[in-house]
Length: 173
Image (cartoon, rainbow, N blue to C red; front, side, top):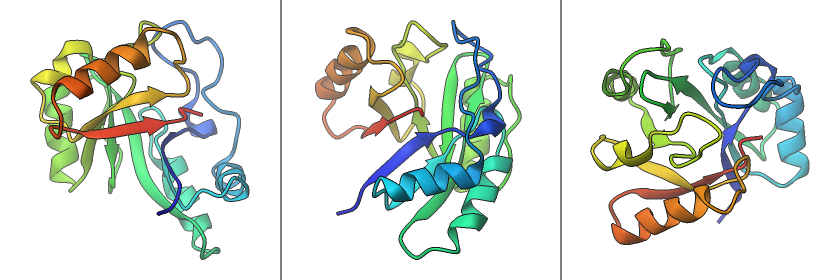
């Protein structure tokens, strides 16, 4: 079994549009993010810049130079209802749509739908909406939200519905 991180950012994420963050999500170029992850022994990473896939496609192309890492094209999409991640995307998904429409667009691209940091009070998470949305999984551990509430509450919800969703974690770095 290998190591994976399904929630990473590059400089293409720019500044967070939601919550209290007033600094860039990442200052790393896509190539630097791939190099950093290779150095840390990652086998698979997903670049999930905010409302943007350019960095993910650049990272994916760059990673073709190596046989020890694969890059999944993803996007952390800002919706009217909270942030959602699409993985295995073929193109950028528009922001500021209703979350249900965003989920449909991800599915049309053959993607996987993940709810990042669903119970964070730092950013716009989907909270209890995850119970009614057609998602594949949600983060029970998010390295960017290590407070006493967010991850623990997500874990409690996951444990209440065993087998319903994929149990995800990501560094959000």
